[in-house]
Length: 105
Image (cartoon, rainbow, N blue to C red):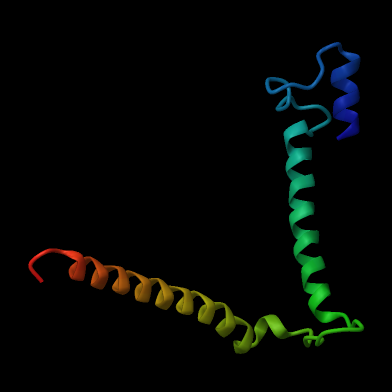
């Protein structure tokens, strides 16, 4: 990525939206930025995983295979299911209040 920047700057062109896709040594500035972003995402997810797996002073340590357990995925589904149930209950209460507040009931 540095060689692309150096080549474009030494040519007096610089890096911009138009020159970001120019091929220099079979490499473009956009590819470099994409790879930086991809590395950020991959290592971020890996860091979150290690935070759950590595032992620490407080909390419980998960086994290394915790992503493959049903407990992990059930927990995610339960949260969504519980939120849907809360939303349904709130909608039902609003409907009942509207029916009671209408004249003639």
